[in-house]
Image 1 (cartoon, helix red, strand yellow):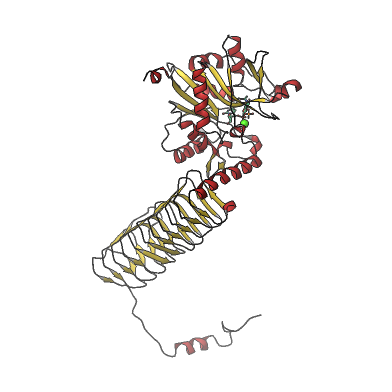
Image 2 (cartoon, rainbow, N blue to C red; image 1 turned 135 degrees about the vertical axis):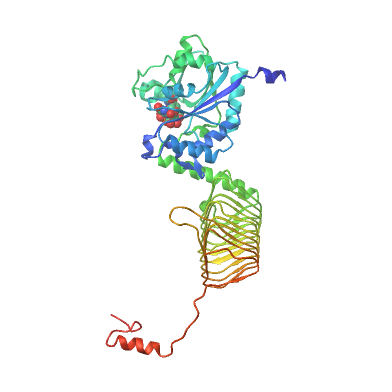
Length: 481
Ligand code: UD1
Ligand code: CA
């Protein structure tokens, strides 16, 4: 209890306003995807373990897309957003973030960069413990790299005390040879942060406000700076180019796949299984070649995914079977379903269990009760269908009138004949038999047969007369060259 009282609060600022020029992209760097989600989501999740409050995300380039990504991929996180209108450097970005933290906030602020997707919660936790144990007012994480490349170098005095960080572009050759680098993760007492941030200037090679300058400024004020050396340098690899992105992707994929296999999941061809770290997959599930399982998917046990599937935010019940070529997004598939080959399950599809959705069937906001089947060539949109109903080949819910979408309801145990249309809004009761080729335009009561056939008529000899009318013309079955 005493320890709890002594621990100060932690606020967080994540810097993610930059475009990332070396990516050569119109998309902000932090929105490029790694392991099936924007890299920013990974950083936010690692940070979540520290319970920061407030948690401020500084955005600039594609701020709206970044907000959407955070809401979609980190739905449980309370995040406040701060805008950095012009990207004038990490110091300026930190100032923007600080603007979103109450003036009277007392405690530490952790600042980190949005392009550190390999950072783990364990390392962040260890850093904060070390910072507290040292009773430090300003700490940052360093690692040793044989070649510091573009990273900022850590300057220490003869007694080993940190004096400053110098950016690679501003460093002389002697400084550039230093192997201890700045990772871009800082913990600073809030009051001190306000003071030192107000002093930084853009007096450097890039004419930018460097956050790294707070180190030397703090030193000048007589504040001791704690450079905490992390063991695992690989956690701090920043992504700066497409090549680095692909390398990191391969590493993440390998780790995820190894974990899944150890937990009893069969991957037929691990290098082509692209599975998000967020996915939960039960034992004895088999995943075939070329499968993407993105976002937050929950896949049960004994599931078979044959191959070439794209799944995003999908729940898939035990023993379901996805045949070749299934695309499914934001939907729930119950147990023992059989889907595909070549099925498209769009957002809001809910299958209760033991359903069959066969080839060239598209569903959208469609709820199918237990055991209901749509085996071939159908469109089911904005539909609620009961259990034990059979949807024949080529059935269409006509849900869109050009302005609005309308719903179709079909009851339990119905037999819907091939090539029928439901012109929504419309409601069909339980135990209804829809004759094939029916266009349903009004509600149908329980237990009925419904049909809208034109009566069949035969005209003997009609074909001969037809050909006569086209005498001298080539016949359609004759070969043309
Ligand atoms: C920075 C550090 C460097 C460190 C390295 C670690 C500075 C000046 N340098 O360099 O010491 O070794 O990270 O990876 O801080 N950002 C903004 N607004 C801006 C500029 C940047 O929000 O105006 C964000 C970017 O979106 C990015 C992060 O800050 O997520 C870091 O910026 P970046 O340009 O990648 O810094 P580095 O040059 O890598
Ligand atoms: Ca960087």
